[in-house]
Length: 423
Image: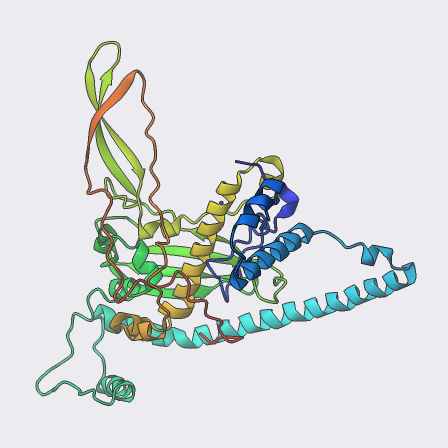
């Protein structure tokens, strides 16, 4: 997210899992305050010659003045509480004690909600396993399952007409590229899946969720991505773990603490998170040339498994972190939490609707939103006494990204899910 940051201005609380608006910056919250420029005598003289301000200009000026004054008061005490008699202050402390018990009850309530989510997640497991069997072609769908699906289609669309099944059997190939298509139909995920990623995601056969054991002091969940054997990496299972803070946040919801991703074991020259270049270098002293192979970070869906690390209190106290750096970390954390929450709450439970595109009917779109990612140019350092002359990229740089299915979606859907959502 240049000046250094006073640490006591920040609240490094992560966004809540239920709603992670991308416009909110909890790490850097409170940094910028609206200010009103001083009106000099010269400005006053110039204003006398101008026409009278319009009512809208007056309103805007008053709004700026109010915002500026409020900004100056943020975090400052009016002195009222401090001026109260000791007897009244004792009553205030008692109110804080009552509120502490309310907080304990809210913690208990949210943990019971999480236990209910776990219960229904277990009930969903056989259905998710059945979905996996049909998608992969490991098992053919039954006539009853096909009939139930056709009834659902007719309910959604009165003009739906089931295809003639005479002499036809379900394909033994399942549904090719099911998960790749479902993920690409999701507006945010579509923005981070490159064409190079698509070649690897064609091997994705299942995405599911597991909650951390109740015995763990830190609550949270895992997203599991199961792959067939492929030419890109050795792993057949990639995991992303999201941990909540032990206590609920001020708003009464669980708050994300951090995320942990699987280390991907890339095969030689197949790392999709890097782009390789062959650079020709010339020695300044001998005039000899050599070829040097360099790697640089690349946009990729698989960066999802290397999540950003939120700064801890010790880092903030001992390091002069620039405002811009904190803002950048904050944005990356928010996006990471949003993606994890969307996969957990939207994609996994409604995978077939994302595959068909039906789920897009329930998403908000805004064509004016900017891309979630910006290209970052990395400067390559010279090695030894050699200097770069030119370079030939081994890959098309950057990898082309497709546009979303309809219009580009808003960065965040800002959905407020019901309490105690069932999986």
